[in-house]
Image (cartoon, rainbow, N blue to C red):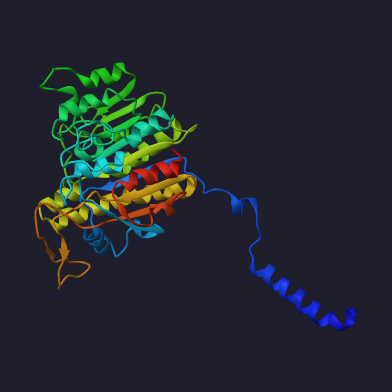
Length: 370
């Protein structure tokens, strides 16, 4: 009887072995939830659309560090009151997850303050930082710390820094802290009394700084806005190193959140100046490379790189070569183009696809487990 059905049992056994070979084994690692990053670095190239990236790549020997990012998405950059956003509304979308009107910082369409990802990180014990190649009270960094309906209220924005315990900030705008017109307060001195190590370009260069991680850190790179890279501004790479060293030490227990802005890509677009755009794009990409190096070594850091909008309607026209770009512009303002998003590290997969700019905020929160 058994001999009669033996071929059937052999076939069944062979089929079962084949199925087991094709089925991945279950393991605790296979069933584990996605790993959350301890640290998030959000890098915003102001005015950085796809053509700005392309031009920087071609003029940089046909390569950028951005090419190393395994996850790429697209975000819809329009604001709450206009198809074409400005930097204030764009950065508020990233920082707080709401669409607001152009010119507004950290408030919704009804001018009600909205909480930012930096403020949420602070309450959860993460170290926090902001840095920019513009003034630190300029629209993009300000959206992460200020709640005002008018982006050019620079002295009011500077006051917002006094309401937080941000660990590290660096950028221009010394006059809005130390030489104020509206109230004659010296916020520079007040920051020192609050426990900050405070310095500026007039007192010491960044290369002379000896970090003391027992104190919060504030450094001002210019009286108002720093100059372009092509006119001598060269601090972004060094400042990125300082920020990472400082925040990694301060956030050893809980991690850190850092926003880095490459601000003047946008200004090159407003000037319809291709060389200005390219030099700023390459400078920004160098900082991206340093952050990638840190993230690869650290293994617990998520990096997101994106722009808030495109500026200039920038095009690379026929006749261009990698050495000589023949540029065209449709405007000296912003455009409504979709904006690429690049992500690397734990949680990077969340940033693939096609989504609203407000989703940058919710995806960062989801990655961090907030």
